[in-house]
Length: 331
Ligand code: GLY
Image 1 (tube, rainbow, N blue to C red):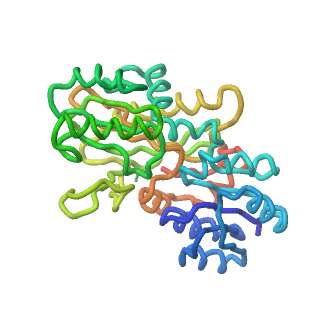
Image 2 (cartoon, rainbow, N blue to C red):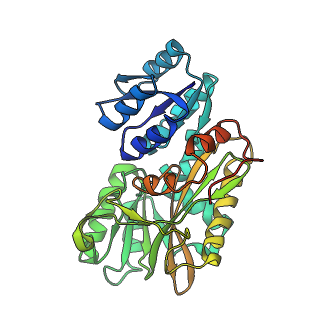
């Protein structure tokens, strides 16, 4: 069996480990033992190390000492920090974007700029704010709490706050925007729109794009959609790959944007492979863009990986080798 490094240690990686261990000898570096990943690594006769996957010297040594040839990463911070870039430099075949391409997730302003250029009608009115003075001006646009505050960088799904849900008054929302501004020097204020949120993920080897079954995420911590937002407490998908409120045309609209985005990210050199995750709203004015992630959603990976007709490890092999052609692919 070929040797494959899997970095990241969430529930998502446990599912990836289960699928990849069918075909690969798995290697992993994790800060603490994730029992599922450890079990799949051991079953595959691979090896794991307790340590920081962000420690590039450690990762490099582990790759070289074990003669690892493949690398799969689907974790936002690791992608931002360039662990795929490191694997590529060391000659590994990779599944996951470089840091430059993962910017589509780790910079919310960049993602909005790209979508504005590619499909302006999918943009919800928003304001990028770089200073307290600019924030005061933008605050005048909103008469009440009906807006959304989006931090610029990665927040593990817990950063976006919606008026009427996460903050009760305009003043509270602006105070949170100020906090975000202090942290990263940028924050986005966006109109709050009425609609149904959904996720479409696309799988790509950089050239071919496959649309995966649509999912509906439940991000609130408590029952009945109450409590703070989380990365995801669970999600649903249906056998036909759609959700009851979506049409094939809606998915086509999302796919069109995602194809253009992947093409845009890869136009100078091959930077983006793996999964592009699109968060969208279905509104009365059409499908609107919320955000991109440069990886599998967690928990969405569980539903979607298990719905593949072709084993995920075979699909990943095609991504590693940049060739989708001639194989039976997922729905
Ligand atoms: N479940 C949402 C995310 O992974 O970002």
